[in-house]
Image 1 (cartoon, rainbow, N blue to C red):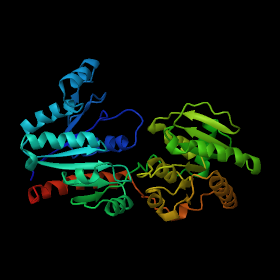
Image 2: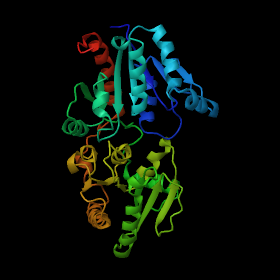
Image 3: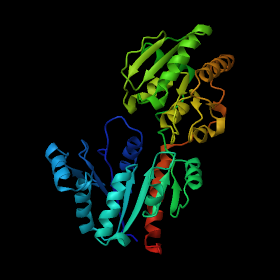
Image 4: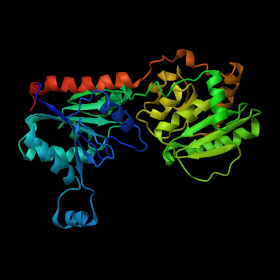
Length: 378
């Protein structure tokens, strides 16, 4: 059905200029033969010819009071814009990313309008564990798109009924940017940015939330300094918190277009997540920059690191000792290998590249269009 149009509804402005993960990938898609026809989102600083952008007005205090007094939904601003598109197009694919409440609001809206058969609903979920009301949502949408096969296995195991099409679209990274440097170029980059040539650098990079495990890493680092003879330094990216600990440097919050520089300068990457991680995009970026990755074996992380073939997995990441022992062992292995990541020989150069990701997204949209009229369950 060539007349089917695709609508992406986002609570982030698109294209997005801030720090993000999936927004970076969508920025790439929007500038590379985009398959999306309409965007509904907050106002972006970047205007594009395609897709057509429907910007929502920011919700003010009066709007919030009106919703509380008169009823309604905080998602009404999305639904008003969606209604405009439904007047223009007979058949549409609606894509929502991670926003469960928004998807339920859309389901209710199109059902009340009697247009469910004219709409194909795709929910992109970046988590690992099934979300609250997963079964209910999956009974009402057409397709669930997950990041990993391991997440799919988890859904299949934990839900009593999973009655829709499921697709897997793993994250992608720009390999022309996040790439391994030669020994000479790495040395040159360190010198340019005032990093020491004879120091082994570790990176921890995440939002500063307790579930990301920074506290565990700092405790492990303090213990590590008591026993190691190597000259090491830990770079903290993603927080501006003051950390009074030897050989720790707080870099702060870094835009995604500058992150590769720090990963290429460094030798090790510590991914200390303490929750069931949906993927771990920063882990992948570090891996592609050549870092020796040491990561919590939580959620889908083992799939990203190919069950330990691409890096070291920590089975007990909540134990400080686990990190101390793993780092000490890895340091010896790294130094004895002439400061080259021994796992790199196992990592394909095109692993999780942004180009196949982009093609994958286009294919998911294409398949949805092809199956649009074959939904006999509606």
